[in-house]
Image (cartoon, rainbow, N blue to C red; front, side, top):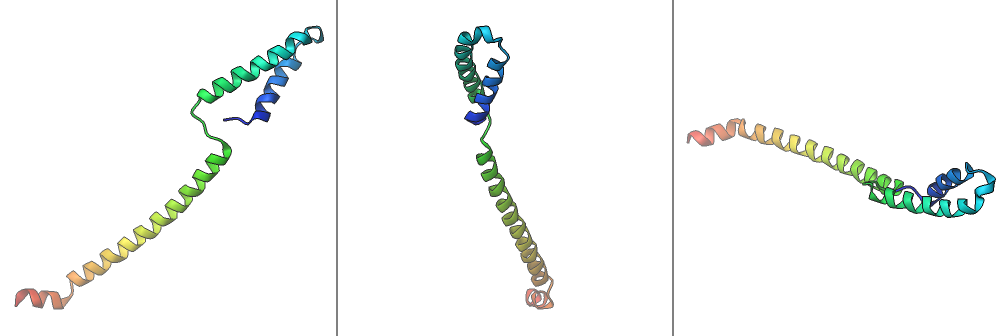
Amino acid sequence: MLNAKKIEEIARQVTDSIPPGIKTIATDLEDKTKTVLQRKLSQLDVVTREEFDVQTQVLIKTRAQLSLLENKIAELEASLKQVENSPEDKEAGEA
């Protein structure tokens, strides 16, 4: 969700566009604009920048671990293939 400063800035921009003679209504409008913005933004399925950055780091670590595991599996499969194809296994199977 947008931070409180950004919401206040948007609300202030809206109220600043109002002619000076209507400033008494402007304060009320600013408060209502903040409330509406906060309510509508909270309904969106968004995350904070901090939450996004944390999840990005988790994803980077997970991808690194996945890559290591894929390499390990490839090594184990190669070793298994060598064992299956070794002449000792063929001779033991014939006996």
